[in-house]
Image (tube, rainbow, N blue to C red):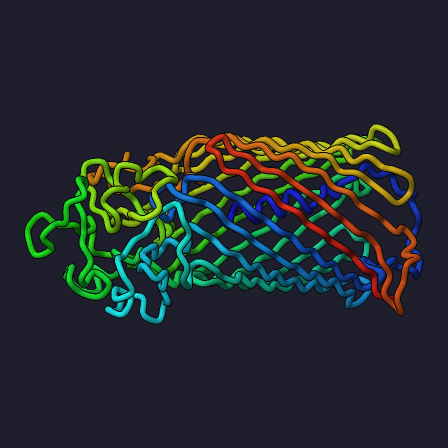
Length: 487
């Protein structure tokens, strides 16, 4: 889900910066060289994202997807000299997730599920153990803070036709850590009307894996259903009858092995080409080659099989309405965690086309086709029409449509078979269509007249977007950004 959040953030806040250019006058070399960046710039971006749906992957493809995310970004660009620019960037994102909270959905009658006593007998002493995929539980996995600082360096040649860049990044959250590095090169020719570029990036990541409570407890206690949080707790069959936990008809996960390789690495090469077609039009083409290796499944996400009997903890009377939001007090024990191949190869191919209608209206379009070896094929179309109002204000109405096929390893809740090698009920890998409608307003102080000491305001941006999937997932995102120039 986090991939969706930041994709929406990028789509809502970033603007195509390509614009039609007039041919430069041919001037012989002089002793003057224009700086790549005249003054230091600092940008602030704040966003609030909310979503809800009924296909949570942590609870096997059903259950609440309620999530709130509050993110703040600071970007500082510093000219080191005429040719070099250093950029520092940091994003801090705090979120609360109902589905992630249900990593441990089981609570006592008192509602006390303090993680310090997550599996102990005191937890059970609070009262009957219950749980539901439709109501968020609390605990360490319910809330998290994602932190990602990065540093990049850009060098331009004297004629500004050759640009070299390098970057490093780091990201950390509750169950995941990532290190990234990249190199890039761009070459402009044909009087800067044509540009080609290549970028290479790698991310060396590692899981700090967290697992569904029932599977983790079962494995840690060698299958003892009378230990830790199972102690004194009835396990019910599909009819609501308590089973004999020492008998032969018992609940147990399909596999006893969890993550064997905590690494997850990504390698990518990006190619791009842009061409000014005239005074009013510009086109850009791009393509990526992406290879992922390692543990690509999410260990938090449950899977249920249709050929394995169901077992529950909680109120037997609620089993019949388990898949309905009316279920408030029974939870089905997982059959396994999500399992996926340890490699994935992705290829997106895209195009941007911008057309300058007049001094008040520009049309910006974007199309991307994507496919991978998990059988996902997707198409994305985006259109934005900036409308200039006076010298300082611009409106940004935008629409985005996305469609994809399902991964060959996806099936809904209780549609997988236990004989399959790979399986997931994550609806991000399902077949779906999605639309996003957005609207933005920008204020631009061309001459940075508004100043406080040496800091001048350059731009202010306010954006809103509404996202909807045909699976029922809905999301809202509001962003506010400001850019300042430091003399």
